[in-house]
Image 1 (spheres, rainbow, N blue to C red):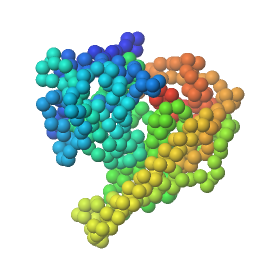
Image 2: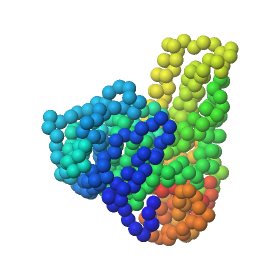
Image 3: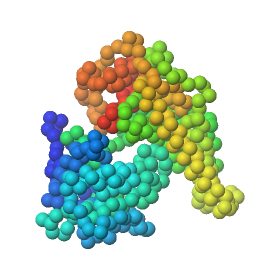
Image 4: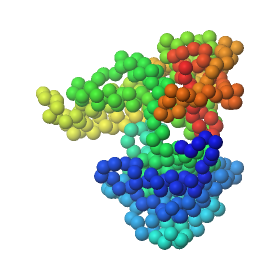
Length: 418
C-alpha cells in the first residue's frame, strides 16, 4: 500500500502485479501466464478507462479473462472443459468494444476473452466470450460452499468505475480501489475482528438447535460451524451490496441495550425465525453427511451407509443450502426500505426500516482500524461521513454488544463497533 497522500494508477498496478505474480501460492502450483509488463500496462489502462464509461446511463461492471494467443484454456484442476464462445473474427481491444461487450456479459457469470500475442509490441485482441457460470460468485458471497472450477488464467473484475480486482483463477491477487492498491495479504478475516465476539455468541446460541456429528472429529465440524455462522451473516450484507442501493445491517447481542436507541418501523414478530430454522436445518444435514463420509477407519463399529442413502442426503443438503441462501437474500432485500435491518445473534430478524434515535446517542470519537491491527490508530472526524456512517458511529458509541455493517451505494462496506 502506498502512502495515503499519493495515488496509484493502472501503470503502478501493473508494476505491482508483475512483482508479486509468482510469489503468492507455494507448493505444487504454477501461476497462469501473465502478459508482459508492456502488455499488462496497456491492458489495465484500457480496462480502467472502460470501467469509467456508461452504457445508457448504467455503470459498467464486467469481467475479463486474459490468455496468450498460443494457450489452451484449462480449468484449475485440469479436468473438464471451459464453455467458450469465440468470435468468427477477433475484435479490436479498445475501450469502445469493451463498453459494448460489457452489456452482453454479466460480472458474476461470464467474461470477455482477451488474448495477448507473444510479441510484446503486438496488439491485444478480443477473441470471444467465456461462460463462467454463477456458482463461483455465489460461493464468494456465502450463498453456497462449493463451486465449479474456474479457468486457470488471469481474471480481472471491473466492479465499478476505477475498481479493478485481479484473480489467478479463483484466487484473489490484488485490487486497485480508489487510487490505492490493496494487496491480498490485507484482505483478511481479521478485518472482521470487531464482530468476532458476536459471531461466537451466534454460534453458541444456535448450538441448541444443532445435533453434532457422532464420528467426525470435533475440530472439523467446529471449524465448519464457525465459517457457516460468519457466512450466513455476511451473505445478508453481500445481498445489500449486490442490490446497489446501500443500507445497513445491525447485528445485536442478546445482552445489548439497544431498544431505546432504535425506532423500528417494521417490527417482526417472534415467529419470524425462518433464517434461524434454515440455518439449523442446513447444519444438521451437513453433520449427518459428514458422519456418513468420514473415513471408516476412524469410526469403528459404525454401520455401513448405502450409496443410495448418501446420494439422498447430498440431495437434501443441497436443497437445504438453496433455501438458506434464499433466506439470506430475503433478509438482505429488506434493506431496500430506508433504515437499518436488525438481526439478533440468535439469527432472528427483529425488524427493518429502523431509525437510530440520534437524540439518544451522542457524538463520539471514531478511529480507523487498519490491518494488521496497530497500537496507534488514526482518529477520524465522524462529521465527514455520510448519514449512515454517522448514525452507526453514534449508535455504537452509545452502547456495546452490537456491530453495524454499513454498505455504501458504491459498494464499499464498513464495519463499525465499540
